[in-house]
Image (cartoon, rainbow, N blue to C red; front, side, top):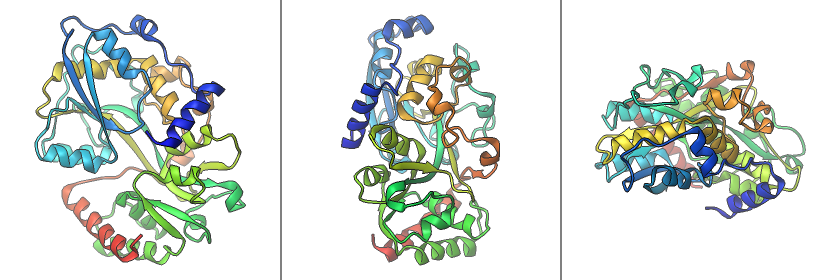
Length: 363
């Protein structure tokens, strides 16, 4: 856990911004574990700092099981492990474009929803998504955007567009996420951020090269730390990471914005990899995660948006987050957001261009 994250948790706990997660007994009243799992073990592989503090411990107590909880810093890390043969994970949390690749490569398996109690809690907007059109392989976990976090005091004005970012004369950090970064450059050129046109992808790379004079680092999902430590004035980052910094700072310096031209939207999902040692307990765990209170606790902790419609309609998600248009964007902003579309050949094309760009920039 990063120092920034620990500071955030301390500050939020004192301020009461993050709602107190329902304790074991309260959650047990909303969700009960099926019989027959006591003594078993579940192996979960998730992103770092991406779950409420007591989500796992409550599940262990309610079901009388042990959860081995490991984390990764990127989908690529998780994907490469599974490609070499599942080392024992029962649940993973891929992003939408990674789901496309995992289905192509037969790395995840269908979920049996017959014993689920909470599937109806999923908002209709997230049912049968483009990356899992029959809704057989995934359950939505959290969603958000990749946009711009910035220090308003250092910048001296509000950021409203990607031009503000790429033409800024101070310190900027990019996210080491090639589909997002090349996608933003494609947007700036008026092109489809999912284009398969090699000439346009190369031109997007050249756009980034031309606008890299202010770049101090291509950060591996650590831009929030650079911002919080005031090492960068502007960072391109995941929305929740920036809102955690905003919440943890006793200041008015930091902002997060979805630029006018648009940004990348993503959905992370719960999935069961092929070769999972305990598929049935994995399904029990996913149903638990769909409980409205459990889901709300996670979103209130991470500052990412919840795809759990019941958690929202029952008022379990913090109003401060729910009413923030940068976390739950209005329809006119949603119209400018794009999902990544992925297949093996497209990913190879984008990643090779990105690798060449990184080497040429050498930061």
